[in-house]
Image (cartoon, rainbow, N blue to C red):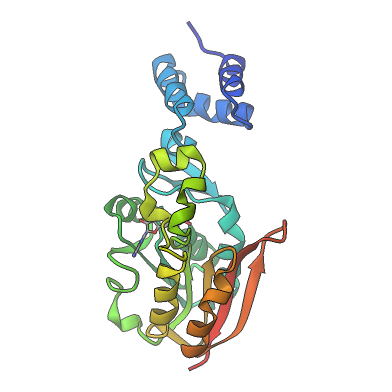
Length: 256
Ligand SMILES: C[S@@+](CC[C@H](N)C(=O)[O-])C[C@H]1O[C@@H](n2cnc3c(N)ncnc32)[C@H](O)[C@@H]1O
C-alpha cells in the first residue's frame, strides 16, 4: 500500500496539528518512498515527538540545521535575536553562542560573517555532538567555563538563548515540551533569571570594551537583571520586543 500525502495530512489534521499539510510533506520527503519508515514517522509525530527529531532537521534563519533526538529544537522566535547579534559582529570579529543546543545561532553568525570566529558551549553532550555536526566550534561544559582562555577580553558579541523559564511556570509549557524535552533547556530557577544573571556577571571576562550582550528572556526579566547590568558596566540596555509587543530579549553594550 502506498501512503499518500492526503492520507498523512488527514491523520495529522484529525489529531489537531495546525500545519498538517506542511508536516505531511516533510514526513513524506524524509521517508524517501518507504511506507514502513513513513508509518513509523507518523506514529512518532502523533505521539507528540517534535517534527525536527523525526525528520532530523529544522530551518533557522533560512538554513537547514541538523537537530538530533533529545536536542532543543531551535525556534523561529529566536531568529531576530540571531540576526541582531550578527549586526554587532564585525567581519573578522569574535562571538560566543552560550547554551548553543543544535548550534543554530552560532551557525547563523558563521554564515553571515564567514571571516569571524564563533565559539559555542552547551552542558548537554547530545547538543555538543549535534552542534559539532553542524560545523560549529563547540565546547562541552557550563556557560563560559569550557571556552578557550585566549578569547578573554576580545569578544565582540556574546549571544544566548539560555534557560529562562521560572521553575513554577514550567508546568505551563505545552504538554509535549515537557514530555519529550529536557527541563535543562528551560528551567531558569525560581525567578527565571538564575542562569541569565550568571551570563550577565560572567560576560565581562570575555567581552571587549564596546562588545555586545544579546540574550533571550521574557516578562519582567530585564528589570530583574538591571542591577547586575549596571554593576557589570553594561550601558545602552535595550529591551527587545516581538511583533505582538511581548518582551523577547535584551541587548546591552559592555563599557569597561
Ligand atoms: C533553550 S535551549 C537553547 C538552544 C539554542 N540556543 C537554540 O536557541 O536553539 C537551552 C540550551 O542550554 C543548555 N544549557 C542549560 N544549562 C546550561 C549551562 N549551565 N551551560 C551550558 N549549557 C546549558 C541546554 O542543554 C540547552 O541545549
